[in-house]
Length: 122
Image 1 (spheres, rainbow, N blue to C red):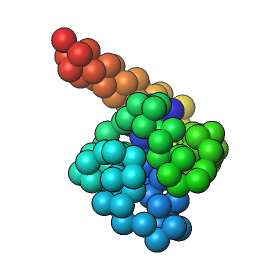
Image 2: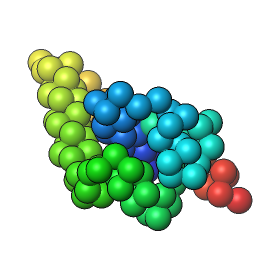
Image 3: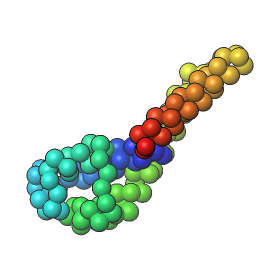
């Protein structure tokens, strides 16, 4: 699971918990001493936050930290398995040469992603 995927799933879980309690973003953000804009970005999976903030959010929502993290991991595994099933369906019946082409394309995408990440970090 990538950091971005983890953020997306965690944010979704936090939003579900907030909505289940009929809370507005402003209310939960104020309770945990974060700006509403920053809290919204966490829920959208666009920003990560510290473990300390996750603990404050969990306490404010009256849930455990592990329910935020581990429930999300199980959800992400389900999403990944669904994506793998989709890939299996899409590649069913391809020739060996076509499968080699797909594998080479994926490897190229991974190399480009690594190059882009390396450039971002510099």
